[in-house]
Length: 140
Length: 145
Image (cartoon, rainbow over all chains, first blue to last red; front, side, top):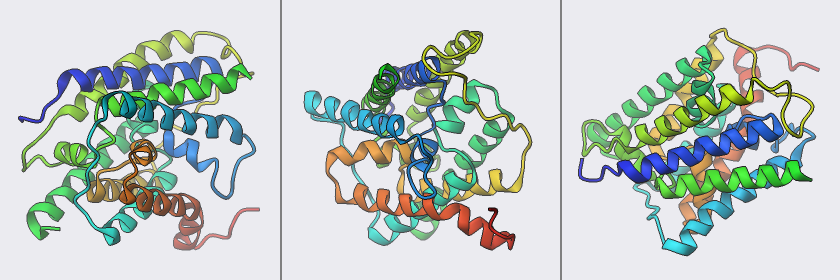
């Protein structure tokens, strides 16, 4: 566990919670990223402005930290075919399952939604199994 | 206008949180999912920290009659479990485990300029757009409307 970074994890997590609180308090919306993006792809919903601005904000927040600190490292260990498959599955799965790590894993858990609790347990277990199979059994 | 500034600000705080906690790094996320490898539990604290803050904040916020600048709270109301929820979460889990990116970090990672992030995000957008049609085909139900 030499790579464990508890302090930055808690600070980053706290900021994500704060972001969800701002969006709910002011706009009455949940900060589920897949849902925010899903409203912009066909069939798009008619409330694009706040969605686009939230995403521009994401770029600004991550980009600001990159500009100031030069980090963190962003590194991949898979090639294009896996990137395409992984991206497709992430898009399809979060659309059909109505949420991702932020919508179910943060906002849904905070609301004690039974659907989000089940979804979060499911994607964490399946994600773990996928890493186990791909890294340790197949060696992708 | 202020609503849009709030959305921009909330996005920026979210992106900052993802960057500080290194969740924009797929290998960091994979190290959490890899219990049999050199396990890194950081993601538990990221999600846990976010849930604790939003849990208490939501309690206060949802006690108000309405949001500060919107007519009503727009919240999911369903509480039932169904195959789409669990199947969708499982499909997402495979994608997450293969690459180590979920939607928020994937978008935020674009600012780091890796070609891999761009490829992943384009595929993810295609998946988000085709998901509803795919489920219609798979369940063999007519397209509503």
